[in-house]
Length: 114
Image (cartoon, rainbow, N blue to C red; front, side, top):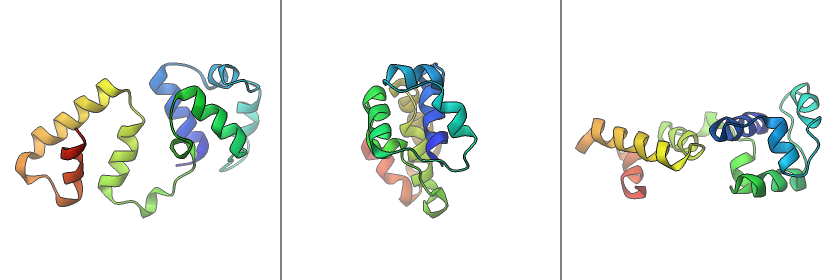
């Protein structure tokens, strides 16, 4: 996932536009169209930190991530972490209900997280 993928997911889960989030974080809303035109663009650390502060998330949440190296459980966990708390709890409850005692070993940590 690229920085822009992560930013767009954060905005979508909050129900706001990227331009609005940029403006609210003290950045120019006109940056978004420019960033979209640059393949795999990642802004400066200061810009990422401003957005992380605005969203109330960690710097790493917005950083680009190579999901090809993640296990299935790690990929699911990354996706789930971008959701609002109520949706995250619902999805994890569904996973635990569906798998029950047969939860794959790599996903056992989800059971202890919630």
